[in-house]
Length: 250
Image (tube, rainbow, N blue to C red):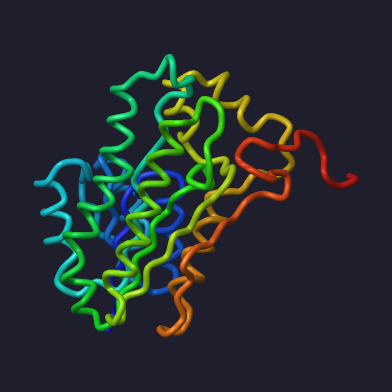
């Protein structure tokens, strides 16, 4: 029987790469994202199911659960993003609210809606893509650090609440990922600022690197739970300490 995996934020970046990786492993993949037209093209590549879905809208989340069906083996909560990079005294509170809505409330809404189907699978896995930003604050990152920490604690609490059920809860926290659109969104479409994030860094993580982490976690024997996986490029020691320049001789 083909198992179903649901991936949110699947129209680009880590979500897209994860959907492709899980499809290659034989899953029926349900892809969710706001950009329906782009999502449909990706789903068509491997026979996936595309669902136009804004995780902050209850009606969209309900429709996603209906499309996923009543038996879901894997849920990958990937929808999210960082909006802005200002110090606290200049904080744009509308951006903070938007980050909390999509990263935290959206993740909780989707998880809540799909829990019955995950239970029905007889042993589902919930993977949430958080960030090393949730490990501690860095200058100008208070809003994003805060929501990623909240997202992480939601996963931790859920693991405690579901103890005794055969459902695995995993938090994958990437560091610097050269991902399609992430920095561009953070800087409001400013391509120059977005490119500067990765300038001089010897091999940032790729979207496929993170997707491989997800694929490995869900492929482990059912009794093995990876509570938390932190993955960073070698050039990055912490979210705020990053080596720019070559690491190896040519």
